[in-house]
Each structure stands twice: as C-alpha cells, then as structure tokens.
Image (tube, rainbow over the protein chains, first blue to last red):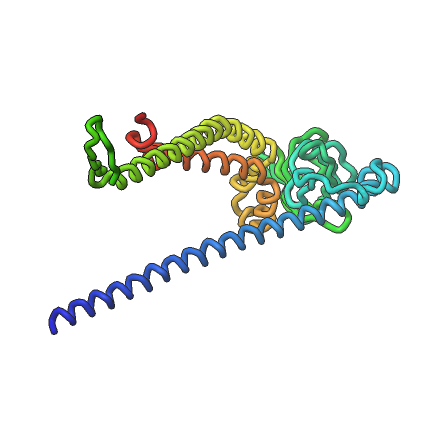
Length: 163
Length: 136
C-alpha cells in the first residue's frame, strides 16, 4: 500500500514537471515570436516613413531646388525601385548649409542629397555658445536638424544644432 | 557450419567463433561513424575559417556605415540638449532609427553568430571526438 502511494506520487510529480517544462517552452516561443513581430513592425513603420518622404522629396524637387518639372531623371516612377539605403530620412538631417533663402535652408545631406529645411518661429537653434537666430547661420555651417517631414518634401525643423 | 576435407579424406567441421557477426556489425558502424564525423569536421572547419575571416571585415564595414550615417551627430545633439531631447523624443528616435545601417548590422551579426557557433562546437568537441574521427 505504501509502495503504491509512493509510485503514485512519483507519477504525479513527473506529470507536473512535464506540464511546467511545456509551459515554459510555450512562454519562450510566444515571447520570441512577439519580439520578432514588434521588431518587424517597427522596421515596416520606419521604412514607410522614409519612402513617403522620399516620394514627396522627389515630387517637389523642382519646386524646392529648381530644374525641369519632370526632374532631371525623367519619370522616376517608371524606374526600378532604388536600394533601401537611397531613401531619404525625413526626421534627421546633417551636413553643411549650401543655401539660405529667407526661412528655408538647403543642406547637403548624406550621400550628397540636398534637403530643404523650413525654419519656423518654434525652431530652436543652438550652438556650443548658446541660442542663435536664423540670421546667425552662415553658408558652410555644419548643422544637425531634428524635425518632421511636410507634404512639400521639406523638413520642418524643431531643433537645429550648429557644430 | 562449414565442412572441409583434408588430404586423408577426413571430414572437419568449422564453426565461426561466438559473437563474430556482432563484432563485424559494430566495426562497420564504427567506421561509418568515423566517415560521417570526418565529413562534419571538414564542413565545420571550412565554415569556421570563412566566418572568422569575414567577421573583422564586416565589423569594419559596420563601423564605416555608422560613422557615415550621422547617428553620432543625433546622439551629440540629444546629449547637448537634454530638455529638448525629452520634448522631441519621438523625432529623435525616428531620426536615429532612420539612420541605422541595417544591412551592415545584419551582415556583422550573422558572421559573428556563425563564428561563435562553430568555435563553441570545436571547444566542446561536439563534432569530433579524437578517438572516433582522427585516429586511423
């Protein structure tokens, strides 16, 4: 009778251990899958933002920087998709100022891509020496711009940091 | 049981020793195991060499991509203006995410992971027991 109780206890312990191990594995799989979905979703979101700004930047190139209506590359929408690194980010720009036109700056950004930056009243312009105004900016000043893209293919600056 | 005749036309009967068949089968299995282990050893050695060579190059590529991406400028702007960073954390985060060199990071991570995996295999001798695959 005592031996039967002992073997019954062993069986129950073994079953509980299997359930516990199985549950741990299921939790691990769910956590890893959730992390993968989150990372993938973040990548898709960032990619969409870059593609949207790149499209608006190309559509408004002639308006912001000059050149023929259809651009120098003709109807670029009929061309094959450019590689991912060619898309232009609309939230962060860095490079020298190559043109100052009232409240619009033109920056020579990454890979030599020009980007128009719109400076509003709310834009904070900072340098190591302190707070600056737009009239203090000069050509060839190295700046970093943090802002958000608008529908004209420009970046509306919220912070301009002069290096 | 096999029967033989000698010169005096006397019949002998020979029986194989006990366990001969089992020993033959075990020797065949051991030899097959050795061949399999040698193939694995060759494959993983090649993989180890390729991954150890590619890892430093991919790291240099990643460092170059990070330098040209502008991420350091964004971090510098964030650290230099902490109050503004907290107010504009969404734009800062998106700027950094957009600037990340994803392809370089993926290539480096893959080559580093493969080299770690193959080094671990050799360190723990999981693919080659000296007595199985290296002793003739």
